[in-house]
Length: 108
Image 1 (cartoon, rainbow, N blue to C red):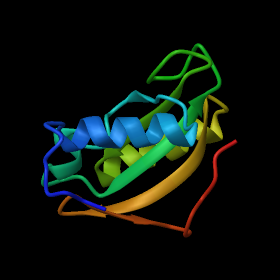
Image 2: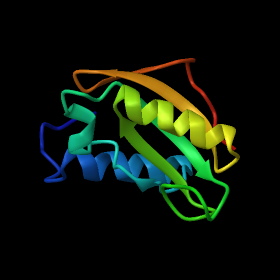
Image 3: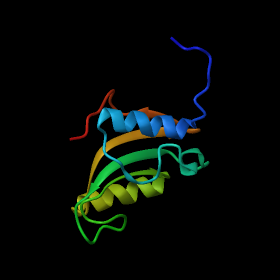
Image 4: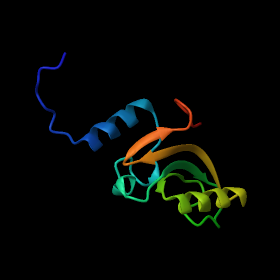
């Protein structure tokens, strides 16, 4: 039951606490509330594993999240086709709102 008291925590802090409780790993790249999410040209959000030292973004072994323009997303798909990364999750982004391709996608 909510007593009406505020916790003094930011939304970002509460989201991070929920992530830790759920067991989700910390992602490199953009935070879920990053300014890039709200940029005019942002149309996509991807979560991916970096598979190669030749990847243009990230370090081999990292799991990352990025908010991207259409052009950036096409480059990520090209990187995936070269075996540099593996896209695990994709969502469309419109005015900061996130619309996942499939409900409740799981990452292992």
